[in-house]
Image (cartoon, rainbow over all chains, first blue to last red; front, side, top):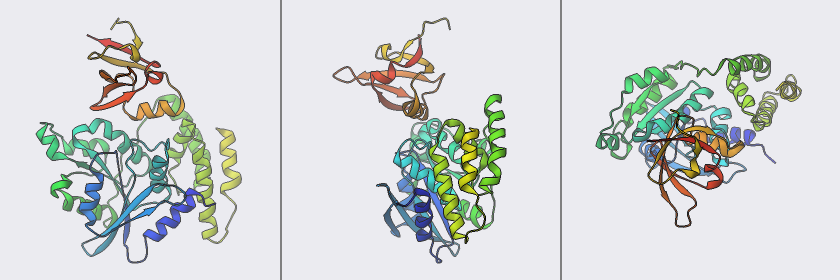
Length: 266
Length: 80
């Protein structure tokens, strides 16, 4: 019985043999042309693999850009990362525990509003996010104009318009990924602020969580999930931290006892 | 404003309404919120399936079919 989190790490290790310089994840709603972006980036250098313990198929591929070998993981298309389904859980766990060097969120330019929900959820987990606004050719046909610079400023992350079907913008996307991963240009998106009650609760839980997470996973995000009532995240984090521990040659006992305290606290 | 609030299930085809409250719980609630069905969203009843249930709604640019089990628990304010 292998936990998803441990599975994620294995999977990640398999994906990232020494020849690859970075792993990036592709996330997005269904029907946003995510797979077209994936194919456009990787060409024919791809394989599909099964996520350990789940019947969710993941595709991974490689490309070279500016002398760097990049591995791309195509996550299942989801509307959310709140782990309501196996697909969502896999996508969430990969971004959370797989620790990709960057996550590209592909959104549909003709339906930005509904797509940005996922983008905001990813931004809440990691700041290393690039927004790829795909299908701009269709948006143009529908006379939809998008203020990319304004969008980038509002979200606080790089925004790249693409029409992956016609290979438009893919080089700009590769450059944006390159900049983020190798020039260490990490964006600092503004965290989403919730109502005063929620923020007060988050602050309280976050403080308690910090010693246990030890900078591995964003404590604010975990606090929000706990407030959501998502108990599964505790088990996943516990497994993740334990796996990490054993891998780092049994140091101190953290995770196990500690997270039980948090559970009670909640 | 001042309009009566009804269940989404009672919205006639071709009519539009603004979401007031999503009264479902747990997983369905999350799913509906993820689909963009949050308070103040404008929804349009597009068409009924032959059996009358589910009904297709236009929610933020996508057509989503909802069963009456769900739509009964969503409170909306019809728009003129």
